[in-house]
Image (cartoon, rainbow, N blue to C red):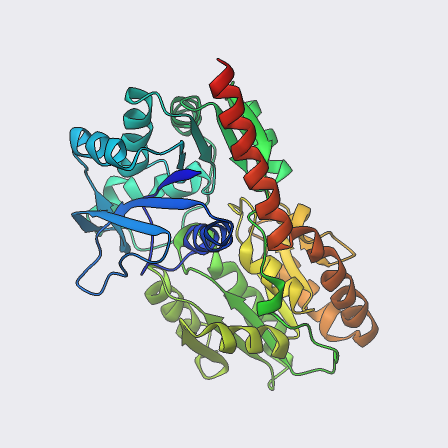
Length: 388
């Protein structure tokens, strides 16, 4: 098959969407498929073509409220021409921003089958287009709330393809309840379990870990406040952050106000080897995000055998089951999270039992199995299009 991946986020940007796209293409190229990737231009060091993958980039600018993300405004006729030249069998759109929306329109003009993946929870990212955030006046976190505007946008965007994929059953339910009439189907993004060797020793290391993009929509300040409460009488515990993002200055200021700066380790973006090692070194992985459509970092922690403390929102309880893979607490509740951290810190047997369950349960997201399923979905979509 010749497949066009259309996305508003790609290398060298680092996030769950980029990781999923890269892994899927790698395995599908090995099976003989060819790809065209339409994505933003970031700079002179942007990765180019690779065997089986042609990359075409559009001029873009850094979003004022999130400089890591680059926004492109592609000219539709240019995109139509590029797609026509590549002659894809199908188009897979991964983002609901200008490149993705233009790709949907171009594929429709060319009468090419269209599939979308709902990777990012729309209400979580609407805060980045608030006027105060765009102008730089609003630097703090905001709770993510469903709005009629967000539901309207979701319906408008995700009713424009023959099929919508979602990486959790919880998200499938959200899309259907929002009014998406297109077929919605579960499709895990998958995990390369060979990259993350599980631990076999749950001895206490006195480390809480958080990884991933430090965005305001992730509510990471709740993790910070929870750690401060949990660690008040545990002076030898540390909190480790892996990742970068627009919320980091706010988090650093909060950490200073709480008097725990000496106990927080900022490692930024690290190699896959170092990340895998960090997951194994951690006693607990903590996240307060309420917008996880799947939660790649949660699955990475589980693959490493590290229990999860997360919140009861969207896909988190589906990935890390409460009482089995970790402890799920109410959203926006630092005291409940602190209590969960204490419970795991104080109970070696519980940490080990949950860690072993994590290692077993994450096998359901094995990357090869996930790509097998995705490939079959593509074949079914093409077969249905041919018969119409």
